[in-house]
Every structure is written in structure tokens, then in C-alpha cells.
Image (cartoon, rainbow, N blue to C red; front, side):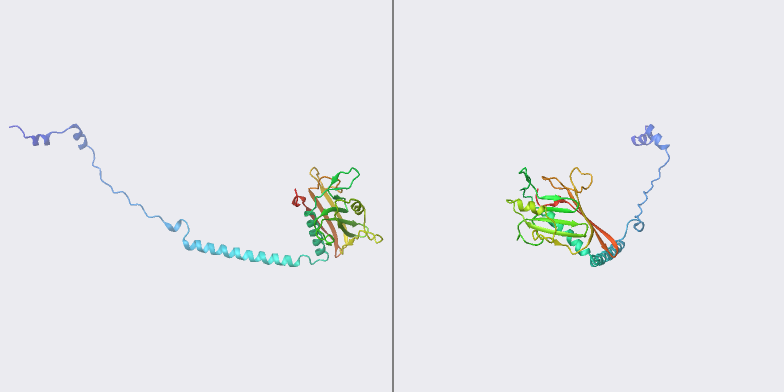
Length: 250
């Protein structure tokens, strides 16, 4: 009796089926579930950020108030010493006059060459400016002249209207000095008493400040104004460097 097809299929084994039967059974294992992150040990909470922001704003507010009070006290105490206000006012006026230098050339020398009106040495400074202290020119440019007399410790100032077409009065003015005999030009004495005043001039190729400026077609890059004032048996020095690059012309 021949076996049926189903019986033959059940009894028939292939090499692959035989090999698989010898393998150990593999147990199905479930993958472990991912654990939730621990938020308590990483970053900041919203409450912590708000608290840090509040503390930072409080510290900044305290520092700003302290700085404001300090500046007010400094502004209040500045200029209380004798002579401080006069020195500060003098330096501010010099800065303003040099900043408004008038570049209109004039003929002053025998060579008939036009040149700017700017002359200076250690104790004398003369230049053209559109800012008048005495307002004698009613808005027109003036020639300013500062003269310091070391023997008396006095600083004198004079100015005349600038006339580009008549150079003789300017030549006479540039040679003048404070004197009670001469009624022209009139020199005004500063109220403060100075121990020393000197001007320094620094050009493009200068390594240091020079005591004399002799260039007729150029201006110094920097002008040093150095004052020494006696206050309560002590000498107090003031210095200001004026940069002519801020002048109102090119």
C-alpha cells in the first residue's frame, strides 16, 4: 500500500529543516521601555530664571543709583578750589577760539606771500578766530593774542577785528605787548595769578612739543596749554591738549 501525499509530505525532511531543528529555541524578549528624563538635574526651572533676572535687575539698579550720586557729588565739588573756575573757563575759551580758527590768508611778510594768521612761542599765542571774547567785531573774525608775563605771573589778552586788506595794523598788533602807556591795543588782565603758563606745538614730523611754531602755511596737529596755579601754598598744574583736527575747515 502506497502512502498518501500528505503522509509523504509529513515524513519528508529537507536538509534545511533538519538543520533548523537542531538550533536552540530563541526566546522572544521585549525591549525595555525608555525611562523618562530626569528634569530635576538638568537646566533651570522657570522660577529660577525669574529669580535670577530679578536679582540682576536689582543689582544693576543699585549700581546705577550709586554712580549717579557719585557723579553729582563730583560735579558739585568740582571748581570749589580758588582759581579752578577761572582756569577751566580760560581753557574752554581757548579751545573754542582755536576750534573756530579763521583760515582766511593775509599778506604779512615782505615776500608778499599769503599766509594764515597763526604765530606762537612759549608764552605768546596769536591766531585768527571767528569767536570774540569782547564782541568788539560784532560777529566778524578777530585776531586773538594771549601774552603771559612770567615776572608778574599775569596773563593778558587782546583782540582786534581782522582786516584781510590792511596788514599794517595787524603787524603792529603782533609786535605789541601789555603796557599802561599805550592805549592801543588794549590788553585785559586775567584775574587769576599764575605761577607759569606755556604753550607747546606739535607738528606732523615732531617727536615732541616745540616751544615755537614758525610754519606759515600749516597748523600744528596739537597745541599743549600748560598752567601752574598756586592754591593754599601748593602748586596745582593744569594741562589741555587741543587737537586742531576738529577745526571747522578742511
